[in-house]
Image (cartoon, rainbow, N blue to C red; front, side, top):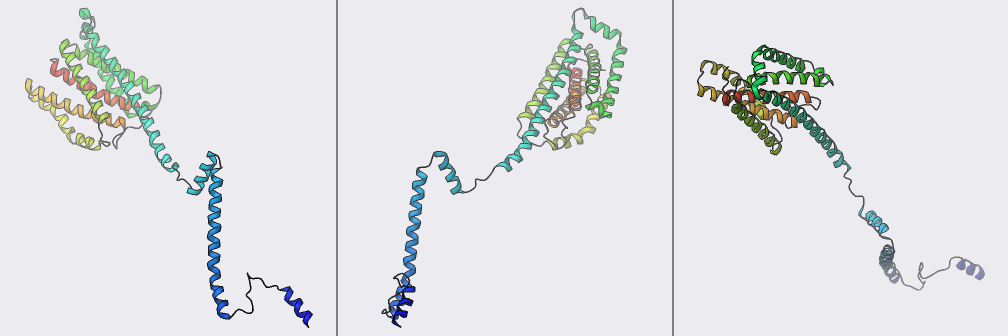
Length: 313
């Protein structure tokens, strides 16, 4: 019996960690069991501090690139700005396309103005050869005016004539030559000083409109178009009033009113080209945009020529 008892006791040896001595009283037994978790917590905190110290020493020995990677992992994922870039990218593309469109329109418009200025300047050649030819063959001015109006209707009426290359450039060139000849014919009735004053004021109006639209912080000029639409009847009524009141002062006031309206309309056309209103031009309508601005400049110069050049009829 004694040997059997000794063997069974050897199979389950008792250690200080998992058992208590048999002589221990119950009170001491429960006190030691309660104190045991606190020792476990202390051991856990000591192991955590040791792990932290090891991590710091390991990080100190890493290369710079590896340290940055470790810091990034500790800080978590960096918020991506790809969404913001994707939003701003279409706006940048639109701005680039719009700037290219504006440059194209200005180049076409500059070519038109140079053709008109050259033909008007031809009337002041020495000995008046060109001027006398135009006056002797006045029917050419009538033909060129009628042909210019027909071409204008043809260009605007059919959209293919605005966008199909080279048809659009050919039609626009013929229109510009016809209207320039008519303008030169009218300028031949004026003196040189009146032509220069009208040309200088027209240039000043165009440059002022360009600078105003370019430098303005206002992003939407749609209200300007609404105001112009309301005073269009007055624009057509002024020439009728001038017909019944042919006085010099009345004619000058009516001419100033027409020039003011045309200058505002020119400003609005520039706004449409730059895309700063709801009725902006499409980037494919470069011929139409150049045509509209050219007509405004043409009418402004013609009206100023009536005021300062002495053209009454």
